[in-house]
Image 1 (cartoon, rainbow, N blue to C red):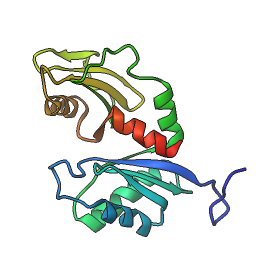
Image 2 (image 1 turned 120 degrees about the vertical axis):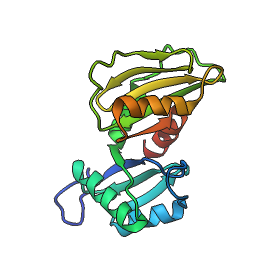
Image 3 (image 1 turned 135 degrees about the vertical axis):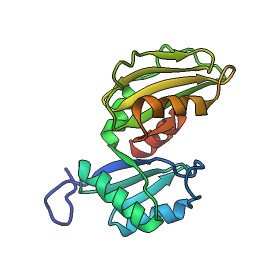
Length: 189
């Protein structure tokens, strides 16, 4: 049985907003209670923030591209600066987890696994995987708005990867450590 919204027109869905630049140094610090309240005031239900890096789980009967626009507009109005948002459904997160995107990757204590969500298309002429041995990162793949990458902290630092992602895919993206994706999945499954 599906829940129906108050209007009776659409089922209530569970979504995750991945917000770029929250508490990452590029914007003023933002308390998660403030972020949660912005989402609740915008009419979203069962709002929960995950960690302090701009991950918001919520329920709504809205869907599609409308959500990103509504959330970005609301955040800019309340915060005074633009916050790019990428919205995924709980089903999309489940498919990502089920795809085992890092299967076969040798993971050491110095390995960091990252998922980047992007609105961009692949950069023209970009051949993947893109490896920068000197900076210790690899951009492994790009498929349907999801970029897989790894950083070896013995040889490089995460900001080098972030710079390469911005250079090749633009700034309409946001990156999360794989551990964060797994934590979010444990909440929405």
